[in-house]
Image (cartoon, rainbow, N blue to C red; front, side):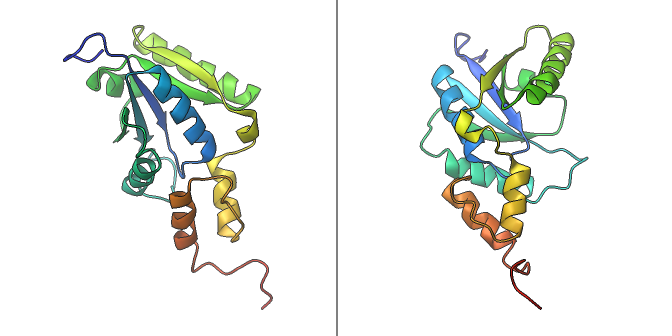
Amino acid sequence: MDSLNPTRRIAVYPGSFDPVTLGHMDIIRRAAKQFDKLIVAVLNNTSKNPLFTVEERKALLASATADLPNVEIDSFRDLLVRYMRTRNANVIIRGIRSVSDFEYELQMASTNHQLDSSIETIFMMTNPKYSYLSSSIVKEIAMFHGDVGELVPPEVEAALRAKFAAAPRADKRS
């Protein structure tokens, strides 16, 4: 809860968002309707080699969520439950696309609950039209100069084009 207003409901939607997809945006928009404040927290995962820096991901998310006044963009590189405490949040939002997602997310939710029993995890089923979508798929399509316009917000599409502008097109013959 918010120390300034203990009745405020604050949730955190953590993830790498490398890049943010329309599937992520669907979860963000739906979760923002359920809470007074939704913090979209970009994980700085040192074990991954991201395409976009944390600052770039935060900027893309800020642009994509500019019309959502109760959404805040942040980043962290600690245990999620510790980060939650610093933000006075007690609900974690996780999107579920498939049974395999659920198995992994259930394990993470159980671990987080073990670390701090005051924190709950809410699973939101992804809209079926985005059930196949992942950041990895988007990056691969963009890397080969495929059309990602129906998969990501416009600012992300432009950023992907810029990142891969120097990459050779797969359909060109040498």
